[in-house]
Length: 102
Image (cartoon, rainbow, N blue to C red; front, side, top):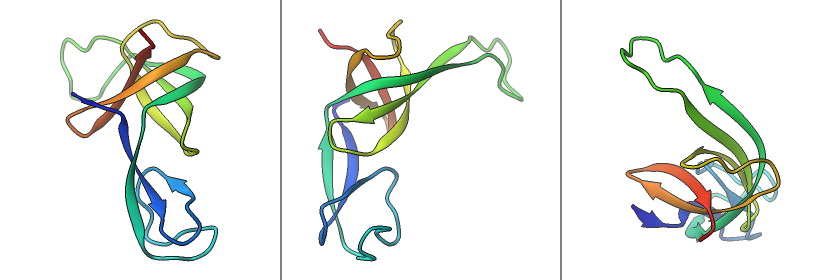
């Protein structure tokens, strides 16, 4: 696990994106710098109850979050955080996750 989640920031206008775009939708730039965001506010929660082809699947919570660096993203939740909560972001492999700030 690594602290924060990777985002891509346009080298021209500094807008942040996740995942990496081919062109910046704001200024049409094609160069991006890698940046990291470390916290976000939970906007909505969903539960994935079934996964096709998986046996013994356990329900998993995901959230739409607004990051401190600007972009919205979907992350897996590792706790019971709800809408309005500020969470810490981290990566497990390449997947983004969040949990309540400690």
